[in-house]
Image 1 (cartoon, one colour):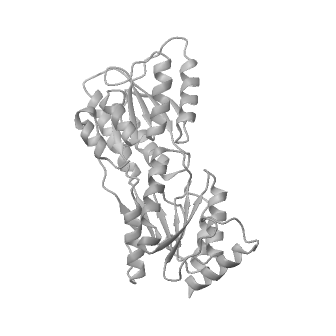
Image 2 (cartoon, helix red, strand yellow; image 1 turned 180 degrees about the horizontal axis):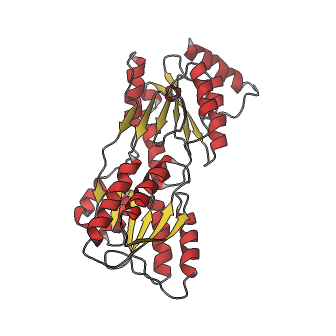
Image 3 (cartoon, one colour; image 1 turned 90 degrees about the vertical axis):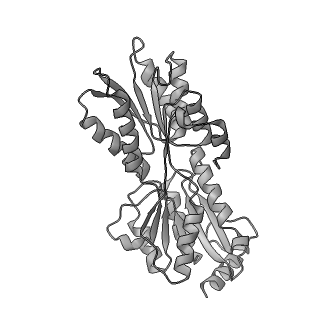
Length: 330
């Protein structure tokens, strides 16, 4: 019944109803047999995010039994909240949300719950008092990712009694990935008396912003100051930091500035194989099949696991070959 109502509503939208902008292609209308998914994606700020969107679109196709209403929030939480309310009005079967930040979701998710529409969180989490406001979360354990990076730092510098100078470039503030990766680094710094945090910069998960803040920071040195580690909270931040460091005359890699990054896109792994990045921690964006498994479980009347964390690994230069990189899907 819900899918038939959605069909009628979308047909009315096509004839000029003032219910807001459509999130699917003009002229699209779902068959009542299709499962209708309303999806709100953060944006396209990084290579990881683009791969994540492509994974979702490939899985939630009409050939696979779905009709996907895809919303690009363009890095604005208010756009995501508007999209959720539009999906509720359109009476979709499921809402898939990649939340920009953790806070500020209680009202919109409560509205979805009251409408009987399950919400599935992908990648990042939300901070809500009532966890029944979402059906499941699928993504990475970001605190564990950061801990893996900190453990590598400890092993790499344990023979040195010198101070370890660290620049930390954060992702979008308040996002789950930023909170987890930041917490891991800050906890490690607290337990190592010779680790010195030189600066904590806001890179917003983009290459352009990371290049800008890193260039500004390095330009403030009267001479070339020693930097041992730049802890970058995603690959695009690492690319911006690498460019800024090289332009300021720094050598990057194990014999110079150790750049640590998260995501493990092909480009990052190539830079690691070439010796420019020292450590790459995987964060798998190919989550579409796992989201589909949750939806199919709910379609069958089963209750899915509340949290599903994907398996991930870390890479150094010694772990990589060109063939391995070429086989990767993103």
